[in-house]
Image (cartoon, rainbow, N blue to C red; front, side, top):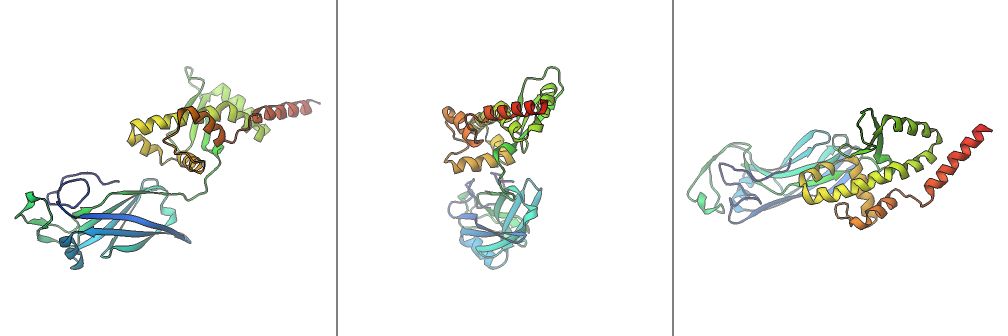
Length: 294
């Protein structure tokens, strides 16, 4: 969960409201390292507020960092009284996208909380703070964890069948971890027969199905990036998206900012499709059939 603007019954130092006239609180995961079965996260915080600093020094308040992994549905909370510290999380408990939030929380009840840097509206007001109340929060950080090596481009596709009578000749669904190419059952059965030809069959499928689907997906990403920030955040956690994003970065491209005129060429490059690969594969399949009939 990423922190957003919200109303509190007391002044909270944060980057999205005007509760404070001066000061700031920032946090970042500045380093990530790996040792055996654990991931190590170095937390770096920066606080510019005298009253909050005094509360932390007196143990009435504390820094708190929260990790939330949507993929594994795990949440973790770590507390400290220093600006830099390292936390440890087992690798098996994290994957893909992790949201990190940075807080200053009350470590005990504070009966008359005031802060001289708070907005003028809070002048001469004292607040009753309960243990655990938020006193400050910073900008959320999203980090990506790749636990497995990136697969080749063709493995991000999955071919499925539909038995619907009114089904279109092909559909592309990219809301799961693989790009699903949905085709009528009869066509699916014919493709299944081609599986006996191994890699040659895959090269034919690249030309028939994978390449058009990849072009369609890349065009959709450009539209989503411009018009739907929430949907972009959703699909960016998918395995196929992360694979394409990394492979495009290696070629000098940004996945959300591709020139429409180059998408077809980029798609060819991504799946390593040589101009005559499909024709050679078809020749091999024909030769195999002829040998079988001798």
